[in-house]
Length: 97
Image (cartoon, rainbow, N blue to C red; front, top):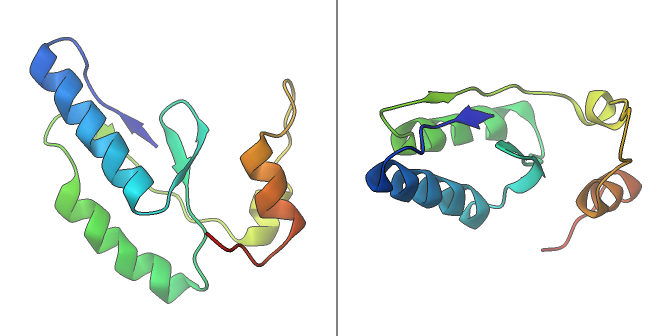
């Protein structure tokens, strides 16, 4: 989850670069400024956090939350339903990108 300032042109460029970085690393947008990525285990996720920390912009806030696949699948969507990406992720545990 991230909240980056986008007032100046420079800040907008930093936001765009960070967002593109996440997409390039295989993240999917769950909701505006909330991106998700599946990892095979906790160790792989923990190692990847170092990659994120090395690329975090200096301004704004970036937060990381680890959930199990079961916790993620039990998320309750109150309005709007699950996105196309979520339906793909939660239907089949094997995802081929």
